[in-house]
Length: 77
Image (cartoon, rainbow, N blue to C red; front, side, top):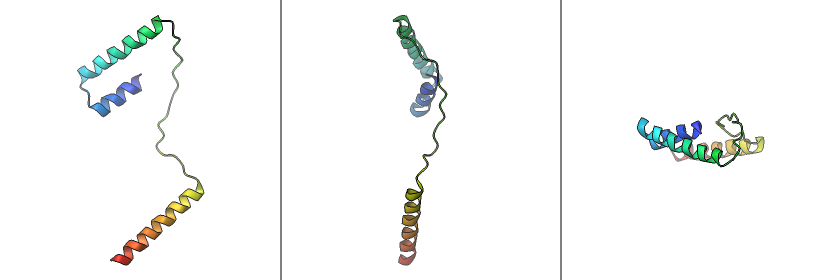
């Protein structure tokens, strides 16, 4: 819930008042879910994936394409 609110704050450029209202709304939703008997799972830690590793074949193909583009651009000048 905190991560979601933080990302909304950053993407929508929320003021502190707007963020408090969004938190209040989320807490109210959570309260209703718990009151209805829904079990809330334990939080899990998640790390942001900064990159997705490519296979060796894809990396070699990409480097080859970049070399071809660089050679083509050097010949034009």
